[in-house]
Length: 269
Image (cartoon, rainbow, N blue to C red; front, side):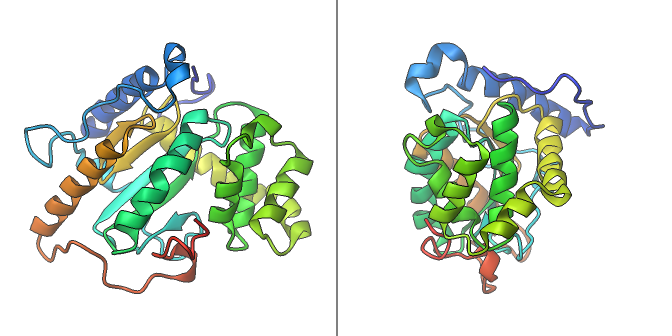
């Protein structure tokens, strides 16, 4: 249903990352292949946690992909949270919209609020020029502290069907409460936005992701808008594993920055 750019050159990967790249690439397709289009989010991705234990399916190299930047406006949750969910998504992706509307708010309410979970967004536009423009616009909204509000507006029911042309992106920014629309438009078309989106894309491609949404939960790949249970299993397993490590904890303790609030309300959700 979606493929990576033909010009992409894979990065040099460690053995563990290479294995995970194969897993994520294959499952990313099967979870979102065209014959399942009528059942968005019901793709048959890998089980979140197998009977082999909480570390089964976890690739330590991939845990390093979490940035944990307390000032990241495209993240929500404490920078020191024991579990980090990285989301690679496209604003034109129907499965991503389903996750954003149905699952992500529940995860924020259940796990972000108590300091267990941090969600880090990665722009992964794969559906052409409008996807790229929406990704840059979301980054631009984030520069004024309104990323999550823009995210909510762009993923509202019927939003993607209206397209993401320049006027539409400006309207979404207004809906999201972006205070300086002229700056927003400049930032959307600027080099910094293009560089930020490209950085996120390259990270996703290096993992073998070919469809959206794709996720990492403390180094565990999950592909497709899986049911809530798949994410809760992965988060609980990662939380338990983090608690076993030296100095481990089950929730964050440091106060979040304004750009990475642990509060769903503060994140505009």
